[in-house]
Structures are given as structure tokens and as C-alpha cells.
Image (cartoon, rainbow, N blue to C red; front, top):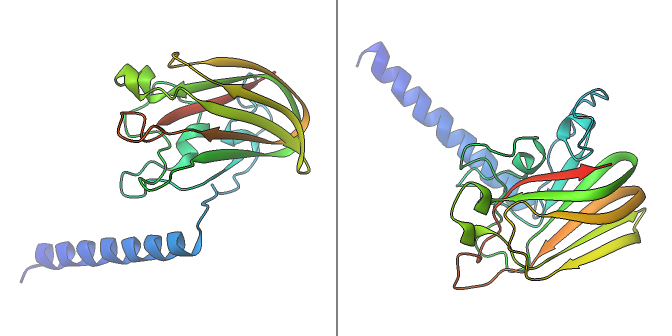
Length: 188
């Protein structure tokens, strides 16, 4: 066997070890949380929900094998590759995403970009609930029913909050059986 053959075997073994580590982490973390990244106060002045501002996302689940990590929902890219979106696990019947702000934050608009923006329109979620809280105390809530916009904008007064939560209602047997969320923006 030559050096190239050993390199290929090594790459396969490394990939298998990474996959095993990922499965182990996921089995121990039923509600995955994005990593805490260094805060850059000057970044993304029009979007308080951007990871560069220290925001973290916690989700009910995510599609590991499709590489649809929740970090994509707070990366500031509204027209990304089709793969770059948060998608919950297929068996998640009550998916949600929660954004944790590193300090109390004020915003009055939440803008979502659903997969219907760059894929087929029937991949846009119709029913969901937005809620803002501070220290576990509910500050504002908005129920959305019959949404048809792929990039809906919702007025919601969130003052002094540390959490934004979005709970989705899935529609089994339709193209809305899974949430496909490309981006969340919290706008002042």
C-alpha cells in the first residue's frame, strides 16, 4: 500500500471518529446550543440577533445529518446556500428556537427569512408564536396565523429582554412538516 492509500484510510478513520463524537454530543445534549463567540459591538448595527453580537441560539433539535445547524439562523446571511438554514430533527413535532442575548436588549421588529425565500414557496411556515422575556418573565408575545410571506416582518415591542423564542406549528404530511429557517433578525 502506498502513502496515498494510507492517507485515505486515515481520512476515513478521522471522519468516523468525528461522527462518533458528534453523535455522543447530540445524545448528551437534547437541546443543542450554539457556542458563545466573542462579541464585536461594532458588527451588524441593524440586527441585534447576529452571532457576532454574542447571541446564542438554543433549539428543540436540529437535523445533524443535513448539516442544518442553528448557527445558520443567526449568521446574518439571508440568501445563503440552500443548506445554510436551521432545520429541526424529523421527529420534532413541536420545534422551537430560542435566542439568548448577552445583555438586556431593546428591539421592536423581528424579521424572519424562511426557506420559501430561496426554495419553493410552500416551505414557508404559516403558524408560529414569537415571545420575548427577561429573566424568565414574559414581556411580549405575538401569535402569527396564516403567514404567507417568505420573509415576514413582525412588530413586537421587546424592551430590556434577554430571550427571544419562536415556537412553530408543523403540518404533518405537507411541505410544512419541517421548519426551514434561514435567518432571524431583531431590529431596533
